[in-house]
Amino acid sequence: MSAPTAKLSFEIAQLRRLKFGKKSEQLDAEQRALFDEALDADLAAAEAQL
Image (cartoon, rainbow, N blue to C red; front, side, top):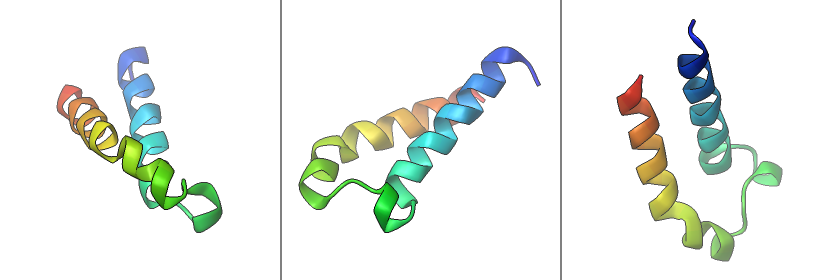
């Protein structure tokens, strides 16, 4: 796996953990609302680059 691919895979894992992780790992509803749109866009962009 190349360095850019590994970095993107790591970023995707982090974004998924923020969005779908255990309750203790997730943001509260108000914080999540601030980042949901950006999180979805970042996740889609990272997956598209793979």
